[in-house]
Amino acid sequence: MPDIRTIMHVDLDAFYVAVEQVRDPSLIGKPVIVGGDPNGRGVAATASYEARAFGIHSAMPLSTAKRLCPQAIFLRGDYREYGRVSKEFHAILRDYTPLAQPMGLDEAYLDVTGCEPVVQALSGAADADVASPEKLGRAAGESIRKRVRDELTIAASVGIASGRLVAKIASDAAKPDGLLVVPFGEEAEFLAPRPVRDLPGLGPKAEAELSRQGVRTLRQLASMPETHLKSLFGKWGASLAERARGIDPTEVAGDREAAKSVSREGTYAKDIVDKQVLLATMRGFAESIGAELRRAQRRTRCVTLKLRYNDFSTITRSHTLDHATFGDDVLYEQGARLLRDALAKDGRPVRLIGLGTSNFTDDSVQLDLFDSSEQSEEELLHNIDRLRAKYGRRVLETGLTFFDANSSGEDYDPDRRTGLSSQIGLNNNDQSG
Ligand SMILES: [Mg+2]
Image (cartoon, rainbow, N blue to C red; front, side, top):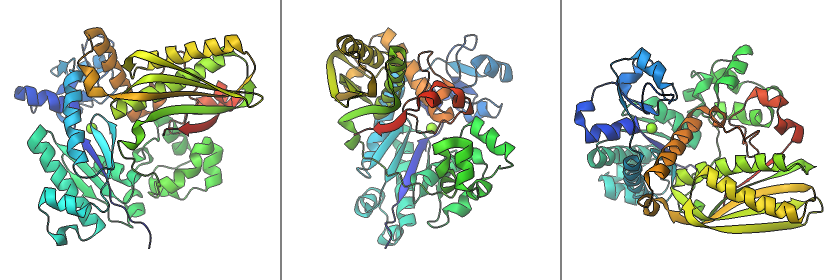
């Protein structure tokens, strides 16, 4: 008997705008864009559906948005309020299952397998309403949508499927304010007619490369030989055809399970003595860890460097911070300082480097302690996370990040073939325990 699981992806519609509309109902039904001053250099973080009708989308420069829709209402955004509402949203989800994994302020994956009793208690569903995995998902999804609407006055879209990947595509397809169940066993048929860009993680460059191969739909992608995909996209490409059929073995992680430590490490194909290369790796790790901490609404008080030298001897060095943080820059600075100190004592070639964080505090405790300058940095980081989630990590990167040592390949970029990463050949060894 195969292990059939009921997975859902819950995603709030136009979240920042929705929060603004709760506070100021006169904004309802209008083109509203959260992101900042339309005469500045910022980009749209969220646009209302009325603004999207003008072709405006996330990550679009605000100046362009203003040109497309001069009558739009531009708001700077209140990220503290968004964080507060987000906590309430995720608390609602945790009522349904301990396996509720936040993927950002406004979205999460849930595994409600075996949660019939609690779903029935919360929704009033009869036994017959939860008698199959699909029915259980629908009952839970409708109940969540109702509670989010009643308690937060925000519309949530829900996708339900046997795995995360298809659930995510289903919630996108259900928007706005909808629920879509993909019948179990019909994942491939559901995906087949869709454009390749509907596959999460498949960015514009990979889409263009596939288009050059004449591949435009997931049906076509699903039938491509693994060897061909590998030759086009490297390691990341190998699983593309499977993903196009809806196969995704990734499990939904419980919120609390991931909370003890978050770390990244990688082994170089060639031992490294160049400090700049080590620092660039460190920068990539810091950004990746920072994003994960922000997603989980955790801040760390302890940063740990791990180094393995060419003779396999391994050291770790830790530093405890005065203030808990989830900021990329602080994580990088602390990691870099530990690295410089270690290299000053022992400059042998490095085989493996890692950056870890632990000793977490809950985000909500810290938010109140932040002054306005820290808050604006926080806003920036949240916006970067959103854009990266949508368009891939490389849409925004600091000059220090020459490559993403931690790449899972989801942000495939053909230009990187000539980049430092391929010369060095860093192996991915992602650890988030
Ligand atoms: Mg959303």
